[in-house]
Image (cartoon, rainbow, N blue to C red; front, top):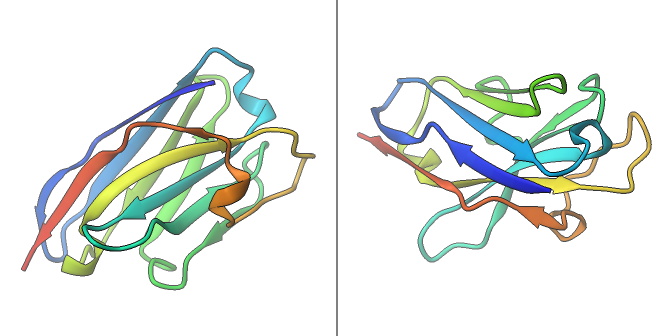
Length: 126
């Protein structure tokens, strides 16, 4: 599966952004999807993930209550709605896909995601 993330940009503290991840090449609904982020000099970290059917989600504690992950299997698209953004959210955001998952299964482990998009930059100014 090929993944293309978009929607990043520059926003002030407290602002909002909506990221999108377009998938192609495989049956999208077969994949658990996830968002990760990587800031300069830091390791890649989990942000959010969503099950194949979209019924189960998981969030990093640092974004819980501010970010919402969703997917539209008919459009082969995953989104991340980000609100109340903070400077600490500044990073390259990457979408990822994990295959061989059963319905309802979800993961936060980046090592389980075998497919990655190129990332989109999110910068939050103070």
